[in-house]
Length: 91
Image (cartoon, rainbow, N blue to C red):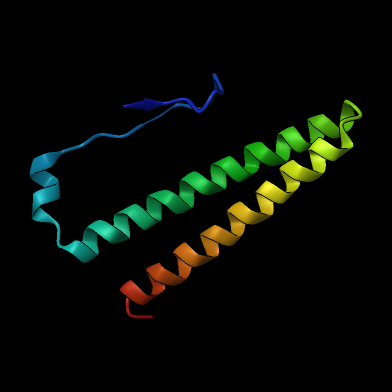
């Protein structure tokens, strides 16, 4: 499944291997999901930040502020995922 999120340069693919997934425990699956979500959110935060800079350069200051807020919220969400991941990994 291809998700381009409206950005022609943002392509990533989700491969669903039913056989492999069946071999993983619940915790292993959740660790993989959390890892994926963290990386995915970092990519999005980077893109939001880039567009905030572009918006500011185009005299769209209020839009830039909102995009930077989205960056902060995305990174805050990642902190929750990272805490969950640490708990799963016994840290």
